[in-house]
Amino acid sequence: MRLRSAIAAVALLAAGAARAEATHPCSADAVDHARKLLAFHFGETEMTETVDDTAKQVGTVKALRGSGRFDVLEVMGYIYKGEYRMHFIYAQIPGDCVLMGQEILEASDPY
Image (tube, rainbow, N blue to C red; front, side):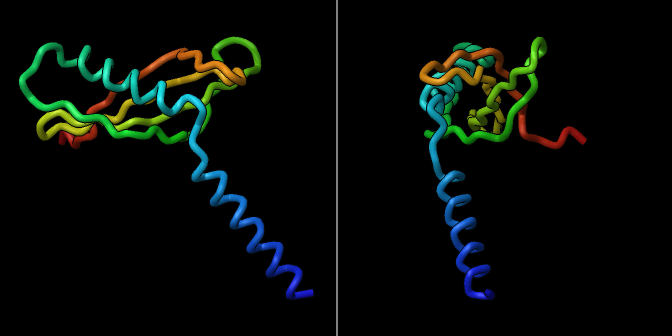
């Protein structure tokens, strides 16, 4: 009985790890939007702008209307010494990347 429990636990861990490593279908779209958002936020600048190559799903949020939910993808961006966290909110529509919202916050301690 203990062996079955151990095998089941290992299988669950492996399935969870595979799911965590899976790339969201809208990851590339989020990275593309991150570059545009960072450029828009800062305008023309001589400082180097860089954006992470991948987006990670950080959860879901409830739609403002109805009972649907949106996926939230996070991309980190950098300008000079500044680090910026960008969230891109996508509708959960299979086969489509419908951007519903976005936000950008500087990752710093103002105090």
